[in-house]
Image (cartoon, rainbow, N blue to C red; front, side):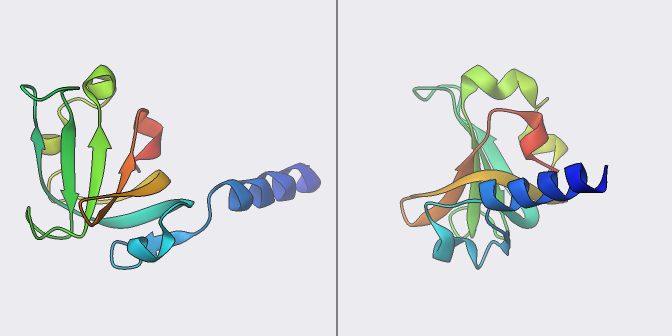
Length: 114
């Protein structure tokens, strides 16, 4: 049993790099990792193509340090996240990308946000 647990922990470490703050995220573009910070606002852009939800971390738009992106097709998995998560400290796991100079992770599953 210990061997299985150790294998699972090691595999997770290889799949998802490390845990980073929103300040550190820009140094890890292109990695699968976890980024932690405080939700400081968000917007459901239902009139925009793809109906994205943008959730800002550690600063109000446009001065935030990180974005969580949820496309409209996955929004039903999150229950109004821009309101429900506001003010909470969260960690988001996935592929760190960058858009307009701000690092972001696109999520499709509720399990990616803790």
